[in-house]
Amino acid sequence: MAKEKEEKIEKADKNKEPKVQGSKSCDTNNSEVKPQSPEDTDVSVDDILSLPGVGSATADKLISAGYDTMMSIAVASPDEIMDATALGDSVARRIISAARNKLEMGFESGDILLEKRSRVMKIDIGCKALNELLGGGFESGAITECFGEFGSGKTQIAHLLCVRVQKQNPGCYAVYIDTENTFRPERIAQYAKGAGLDPTQVLQHIKVARAYNSDHQMLLAEKIEDLITKQKLDVKLVVVDSLTAHFRAEFVGRGTLADRQQKLNRHMHILLKLADTYNICVNVTNQVMARPDTFFGDPTAAIGGHIVAHASTFRMYLRKGKKNTRVAKLIDSPNLPEGEAGFVVETDKISDI
Ligand code: ATP
Ligand code: MG
Image 1 (tube, rainbow, N blue to C red):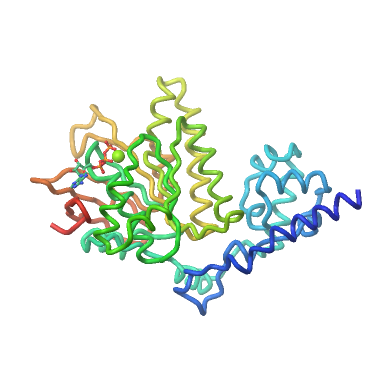
Image 2: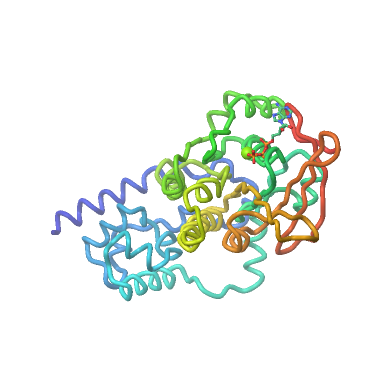
């Protein structure tokens, strides 16, 4: 038993080793603000063992399920901890609440939140109208949903974001979950040239995974945290293109709607947690479905309904405009007025009309 514990402590120490080397190289934006990065919340096995109801076997299970930082435990839901450890509901709740206490989570005063907001990065997409619509660009720490009909520019924006995030944060990584097999490295290379970056280097800093079904898609989203905490990649952008296609195809018929929404809800929360915990910009795409019962306004609605709408911080509706133009409309934002912006998809950039 004692030996087992020793081994674990050794394991935890090893986990800590690359911390120094991996200290954020490109996170120089706000050096005077103390970052609440994942490194700050790294814990030793002893810390996890100090949580109430956690013995060495439970600590092992928590760590091997990826709950190896105080933050990851503090922001987990009891169900997640129960799934990972086979603990009962009340113990899971106690563990989470103890982790939250240790991190002194709870109410925060407004000035501290304002300071946190100052760490928000806005990815400049290179198109003035789109940037302005979004109050400066695509925000980190939030989910931005782009929804619209086929060919409206959702995938193009997602590709360009993978490039522009690297222009702004040299050396950082983008993660792309591709559900429709529409990721095109050639397009990335073209956009990279347009942004004055080396296409090969840009491509090397995009981790692409093809998701074959909704379960796989959810699993991939869960694995992103490993890229950050284990591989120490400085992930600044996560794209899910398309968020809803698999869910839509797999859950057909009215009887399956509740299941689909429940799974989508879990998926969105994983993404939201990533955005929030690691200050990542999450971009998801969503198609629209025909709404034949609407007589006024736009007879289309985003798939995923309220679940996706609620979890997304910003929602942008894209449609084709006159000639070769596209129009983006900001539908929902906590701090920006609704508005529209026109843009054009070109070979090497997205530009103003
Ligand atoms: P879907 O719902 O089918 O996934 P989408 O909204 O993702 O649609 P996009 O792939 O973003 O659609 O947009 C496709 C459009 O982008 C094309 O119709 C074309 O107008 C434009 N486009 C794609 N590649 C180029 C290119 N190399 N040069 C210029 N425009 C391009
Ligand atoms: Mg697409």
